[in-house]
Image (cartoon, rainbow, N blue to C red):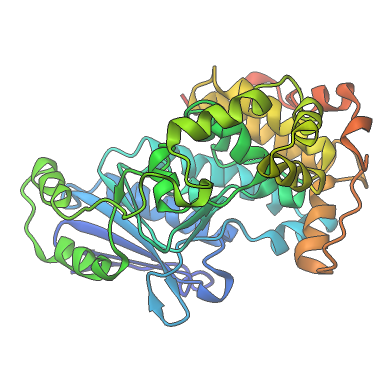
Amino acid sequence: MTFITTPADVQADIKAEVRGRIGFITLNRPKALNALSLGMVRDLTRILTEWAGQPGVLAVAIRGSNKEGVFGAFCAGGDIRFLHQAATENNPDLGAFFAEEYALNYLIHNYPKPYIAFMDGVVMGGGMGISQGASIRIVTERTKMAMPETLIGLFPDVGGGFFLSGCPGRVGEWLALTGHALGADEALAFHLADQFLPSERQADVWDTLGRSDWGSEEALYAWLGKQFTKPLELAPLANLGGLNEQEFEAKLEPYFSLPTALDIIQALEASSDAWAQEAAAQLRKRSPLMLEVVLQQIRRARAMTLAEDLRMELDLVHHCFHLRPGQSETVEGIRALAVDKDHQPRWNPSRVEEVDAGVVAAFFKSPWADQAHPLASLA
């Protein structure tokens, strides 16, 4: 048994070991729902890079922990309190966090060995970034998956443009703008998960991975394939009013195919459908400016590679904090949700009808020359 030690400041947050031929990672920051810190990002990068070069490590498995033990919560995202503090103090670690997190996301998507993500419980934001690139994305009946960044005046980053734009139909636009939380059935239907495993079986599968002497990746995949089942409510989709995948995609199309967020909201509000009215009400609570930015992000990403998308997202996140000094939608959104907790963000502008197209366009202008981009090395 080989243990991977971690620096003292993050040792409690990441547990890593090799058992048999599998490298096991447990996110161990349960009080924060395993929200990623800069130290955790760096530690994950170091561990995965080390294991990639070790012939004795055939594959990697990753899970989260909760206050009672392992599993139950995967990762709720990035540490937004840190982001707020770093932004208000002009801490250079703010830029480092995003650049290094996106590089980690790229590493996972291109990892040379099987990477198995046990996406049990909450899987949001940064948690999606360290799981969507997995070879096998496992969900359970407890999975609650979302990219809820518009709630804090941000956008679905960590490669969100890439994997959300790959969802069928206009599901990507809908998820990105609303931040809707998906269950296992929806995640599978919308291509954001690969397999279903009942939560009570996770521990046995996890332990068996480390006890068996896997001779090859093929043997590993063949055994894993026999462990999975279908969720009971795969069709129709329980959280979507009983509609099946095709019916729900057709429901989205008239609204979320429209050119602007303003067009989408006005069309939803003009509908007599209760679902459309509720969706419009949700969108009216989001940052109007960031709704327009997010819509463009998803649509631009459809024509991009992962590397191109991550570079665009780093440009966007730089502008989220620096484009309008003293008027960051993201800083304000985090303040309202997690700092003052008044849940009354003061968006600027306050209505989507007032969004300046020129300000939206400025988000997509990179502050770096091509070769000077922090993620220029991504292929």
